[in-house]
Image 1 (tube, helix red, strand yellow):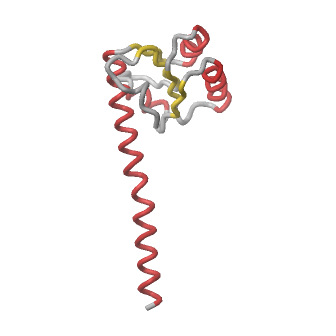
Image 2 (cartoon, rainbow, N blue to C red):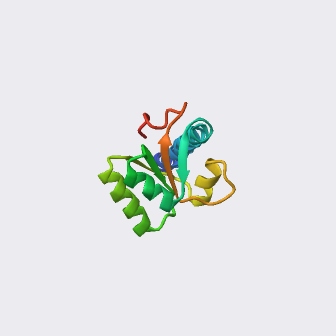
Length: 126
């Protein structure tokens, strides 16, 4: 009887570890589709230096930071975004994934969104 209970616990643990990955994958895909729509209908700046300029001038509405962005660079972008009262989204993929999501054939660690276009990326807070 004790073994059955242990087996049941292990099977529920297995399910609980699997569920979040599926949900996070859905979030990633929804973020990718929103980002694609922004690149098509809105206006976005790719890159760290240009993104910082956008934050300083107050053009940016939202900033996406890749997961493998260096910590110092990430904190600098976050700090400027906080001063500019701009929403920051930590993109779950690395800079290669972020560049691909923007429809570019190169890596990109920072994307600054100026105009959302038809996308609901600026109103949705995940």
